[in-house]
Every structure is written in structure tokens, then in C-alpha cells.
Length: 317
Image (cartoon, rainbow, N blue to C red; front, side, top):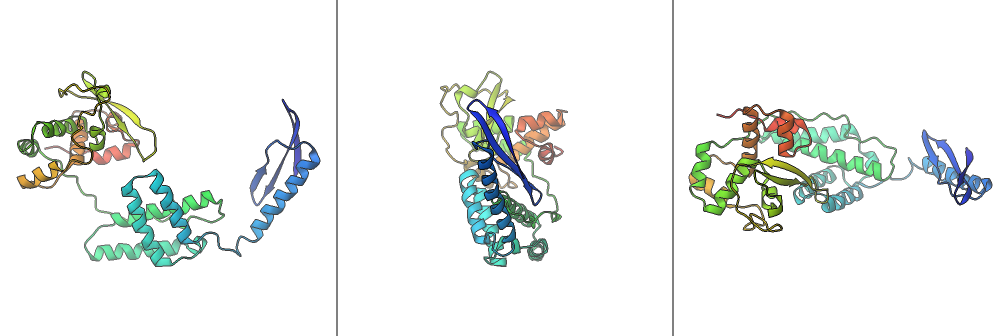
């Protein structure tokens, strides 16, 4: 253990630094004398030493406490869908292990639990998408607790391999499918279908489009990865003629939530089921067919990873 001095504008100040259990502890440079820094260092050293000795003897954090803290965070920061998904899978975890300390849950325990879930789904003829979703959720849960509480435990989900799934091709509606649906739409509905078709926009991005983001041959779309993350703009070319609206006025102000008319028109046409997101896949696949570079397609779609974009690309008829 050692104390050091530093010359600041307000005068000489002291600070300490020591190592304990492979960790380095450094204080702020606030102490007036070397003795004062030494006394503070002794107090801190005693604190971390005692914490290390008592580590095995006391429960770190109960599973229920960890789940509640994680859900509170997700409810504030993430989408409602992601919150409900976490709540569902965390309830299963709590039902399986009970309200034990999280350091009592081991990798074999989690792996065995997920294996049983996989076997149950396969018996019902279902794939492992839910198992892999649960694995991601549990990994994030334990990682958050380890980070927040500086816990000296291993994440029991690290090293568990994802379960194999049978990749399904996303259905791409044909020109005939789209035209048949549009024939049942009014002018505003047709405009929204054409807009998503030409820009590959997420439906919520389309609904938030305002006059100030409409150019002569382009639109500015904004992506938000989570509830309170920054909006990230991207410029997307468009040939479709859009009506003029005021700067702060939404182009598609008729809808405040996900428009249901598309689903109804498709059902009325007795087509194979598709939705707004299928049009986004069609947009990506169309760009690929035109020879547009993958990185450019990724940028136009607002993706942050090329692997995500690659999952969108399919051969068009």
C-alpha cells in the first residue's frame, strides 16, 4: 500500500493506491496530508478484506431480487414487447430454481433447464427459437447483476451454446399479391403500402415521418434501437410522389399505432399471410437483386450489423 502527492491549483493533495485479490483500488486526490490518506487507505483495505472473507458466507442476491431489478430497468429503457418477453422467461426461471441466491445457480443447472425446455418444444413440433431467446435473456440478467454489484461470480450462461433451429424463409409477397391488396385499399392506405414498399421503412418509422424530413427524391427515416436511445437518421431515396405537409405535420397522421387494414385486406384476398415487415424483406432482396453492395443495403435498412442484413436477403421470383 502506498500514498502519493499531486500538485493541484488548490495546493498539494494526497491519494492512495493498493491491490487486493487481483483488483486495484485508487482513491480520489482529496486528502490534505499523507497521514490522512494512509488512514483512509487502511479503512478501505479493511472494508474490502472483510467483504472478501464474508463473500461465501452470505447470500449475494436472491433470484427474485435480481429479476425484479432487471425488469424495472427493462420497463424504463426497452420496449413493451421485450419487457413482456423477459417477464415470461424469468418467471419460468424462478419457478424452476425457486428464490435462491444467484451464486447458487450453475452452468449445468441452466443448461439442463434449457435442454428440458427444448425437448418439451420438440415434442410439440416446435423449434428452439424460444429456448435461444430464454438463453439470451438469462445471460443478460446475470451479467447485469454481476456488473451492478461487482460480484465475484461467473455468469452461468456463458459458454452455453445456442440450440439449433431450422431457418425459415421469410415469405416475400409477389407483385400480384401487393396489387390485389392495393385494389381493396383507399388512397391513403395505398400510399402507405407504396411508401413501405419503396423505402423498406419499419412501419413505425413511416408513421412518424413529418414534412421536414421529406425531400425532392428522398426521405429521412429515424431508427431508435430502444425506448430512450438516440434517434439515428438515415437518408433513403424514393421516387414516389408524396403530398406536401407542414414541417411538423405527420404525413400518415391517420394512424397512431400499427395499421390493421393490411392484415384485413390480405385475409379478404385469401392470400398467404404477410405483413409490413415482409415488405421490408422484399425491399432488401430487391436491392440485392439490383447488385447494390451489402453494406449500402445495411445502411438503407438502418441495421447496425451486416449479419442482420444478410438474414433479410432472399431470391425474388
